[in-house]
Image (tube, rainbow, N blue to C red; front, side, top):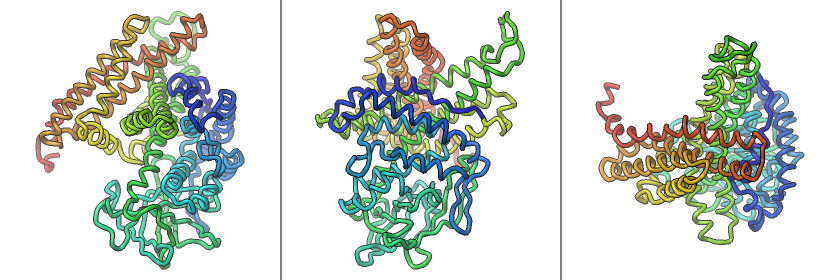
Length: 587
């Protein structure tokens, strides 16, 4: 398996030119995010990614987490790697200094998490979920709960989990049956949760489970769900009534323990209520939205890792003579279709990075900007683009990991090369934290049908305006392509709104094609912005080929990837009816 090299220049460019980190650093609370500190953080995080986490990636695939009589044993080396993160305070990058964090913008934390997920996706799930649980407690917990739980969670000495899914309640959280019975100043929690990532492990002295459960008098459905903090170890040092009864045997991410947890087999696990009763699903979304953007980031990260390996193999592998080649032996990188595959991977990686970092930056703006109107506009963009960033980036990441196997040819199908592991690891990303269809349904239901397309229309108009602004310059053709794709997206919105007025099934039957269309458009916007920033440097006399490559990637994307937007339109506008063309017994 090829070593991982953090793409620091590309990451820094995306942070500055696409996410606007210099502007974020002028917002209240983010002043410490100076260029020097940012460089230092990225460089050190890159060293940890390449030198500590990446060497354990293959080890975790071959010797994954195991359930023993003493609990879950993680992959050899995992504990030492987690200790490295604790020693450096990395888990607290974006958290308030009052709890031991660094108080830096969340988008900078995204950049660090990208490198760690690319280096070792299975390992990176633990800090991602711990940060999500920390977010939920920081947002909705009482002052007492924050004081007792956040310092150790921010430091990473304690980790966190999200407990939603049950054997008979997968994505349908209305069917949650875990019970929480009041007892004095606490609650007795009983029930079973499945698919709990890092639900048990030996990395930290305590695990803080955030658990969805029902009170005895709770109404039915999602309005009757409450959120509880259920520690693995109680404050007096005794074990809580929480047991890992099994670990799932998975296609990939073998180093990540995916646990089945039983609460209350010995009388009831002790838990405490977060916030108000029956508002648990609302509170859990603080963690879920963090996780959804984090999983979208995993799509980007695994694609970057697969690309680096495919590129290295293509440079080294010599087979056949490329069409039109007149020199001596050369790597397959000179074969036209191998070059097309690598360009497709690289262009879409940079498109995903631009989109995801933008959502991260807008999240920071929605929290820190002093103008409430600016905060509200940023929140609208976050609500609109989070399902796109999660759904489109994970589907794209899976496709690019598969292309990485294709570049290797037959050797890609052989486990020893490592290319297959990237695809196996990637395959879960479009499923957990809400499948692509769930993301697409949220996109269409909340951002198209509910407001008649106003929110998404605002974004489409923004993209079209940026495309028209390129009309008189060297990127005129790319701008015209962007305008055309934006017009396609506008027509798709019209079709969905019209379908929603009649048979809503037709609108939702086209929701995934629409999500893919909007993701493709957002990726085009990101690359157009990147090309514009690069062209400005070229116009100032910069002759570094790296800047020309930004322009070249945008041109490739507009020619090879952006046309996919138009291809999605018929499925949205005319094809939804065919989804229900005959009865289910004929499927």
